Image 1 (cartoon, one colour):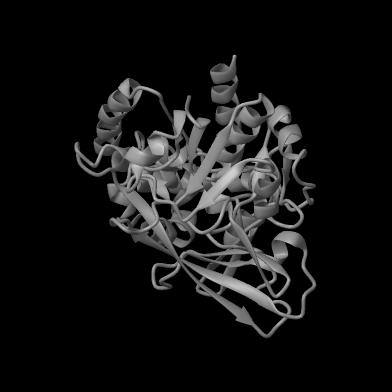
Image 2: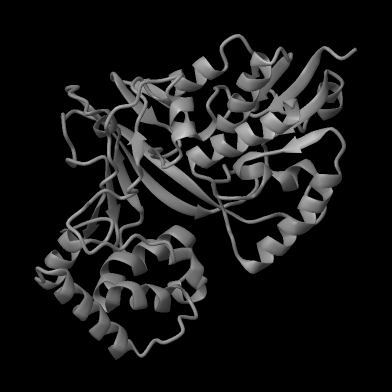
Length: 367
């Protein structure tokens, strides 16, 4: 008999939910992670009394009541609402694009005036069937907003011009003809008081966790410990990149503590011009309405992923989609292994969706 029912590779959200539910059902679980900490990319670390989002801003938002009730077992959430601002060469605009943005850009006051301005710019650009991200953006919000608030930022984010990016990337762009700066517009949103690490700690309460363990380097030995494996690492790495490497975008952070109580007045400020090398600055204390005498900021730089870097965003283009489809065939045929999460499924997942999928998978597994 094996020592554990499940070996769970990755102590992020997917692995933690799976482990919590499996333990509740009386299963013996071992969770391992290559990093020196739990919580994956939602890891928060206390600096000067501030919970710093070490791998970038994570704002919990969902319309799924069951998921909201689920996370509230492990943390109490505050009322934080994501309302980022855009800085274009010192001009400040509200995001998502809404009547505040249109008023600042064009001086328009009514939704009818804003729609007419966008329609006029779309007609002048002569776009009927958008073929790329640039044309899709202009058809949604007009040329001025595209030039100032989308072109430079998106180019930095993806490392290629908007004319080379597929239109669908921006199809879900929130555009509102109301004076509402709530980016997600979700029924439930907030940040866990005390940070995400404390929340994941509660999920993993009573579960054996080993950190600093590289599963792929010790796979043969580790596989002997459990009947089943839940793998949340990169799917291509699992198979030794034998079909080729999937592409990701990576993110690099420059974090510093400043001797001021308030650096930028908002948790998230996007720098939308092409000249500023970073995409945005996060001021972490504002996620929890902090009043500490100091502040911690992180400048975020988007980068092309290379082996050894942290993979963040799957590059969802045709080529990578086709390659992932081949890896998925291998994954589906792999005996005794469940592939899950953002890297295991090569999919950009919001946190609520990760929880929803993990609950569904573990529910079927334990049924």
